[in-house]
Structure formats: C-alpha cells, structure tokens
Amino acid sequence: MPEELNVEPILEQIRRIHPGDRAKLSPFIDKLLTMLDSYLEENKPINEEKLLAFAQELEKINETSYYVYNELRARTKFPHIFDRALSLLKWRRLNKKLGGKLPRMK
Image 1 (tube, rainbow, N blue to C red):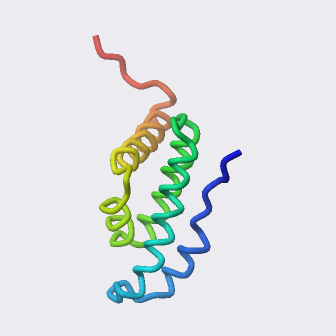
Image 2 (cartoon, rainbow, N blue to C red; image 1 turned 60 degrees about the vertical axis):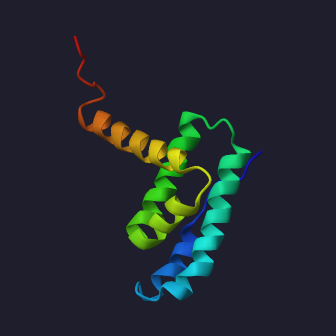
C-alpha cells in the first residue's frame, strides 16, 4: 500500500529559514520534490480522493513558501498533476460553498 504524504516535518524546517536565503532552502526543496514525485509514481493512475489529499499537501507548501512551491512546480515531472490537483481542490470548495450544487448550464 502506498504511503501517505506528510510534508509537515519538512515545512517546519523551512519555516525556520529566512525566505531570502534560497541556498539553505535548496536541500528541502529536493526532499519535497523526491517525496511528491515518488508519491505520484506510486499512485498511478491517481484517483480523485488521493488527488485531493495531494492538493492539500501542495496547498500547505504554497502557504508556507510561495518560492518553494514554485520551485517544486518548475522541477517536477508532473506539473500538470500539480495544476489539476489544486484546481480540483478549489472546485470542491466552491461546490461546498454553493451547497453541493454547481449551477447547470443549459
């Protein structure tokens, strides 16, 4: 069974580094990249539930450091999955706000 993602320990270390010190962020970016790409490789094809969990982890990374997220997005083998995951998460939240009913197009 594929392992679940837990980026929180790495994000804690990133929070302790000054955002402008990009040289010190590089090893953590490499660790996150390896972790995220491995997760996507192990879960091919990725189902919607796992894609939402993945998007929540990406969102944590983005909230912690926009620079780190952009570097991950630029270096990953799966940039389209990053985009799709975050898009799905946003649509799910919008749908929930609308009471679970998206407007129908005629």
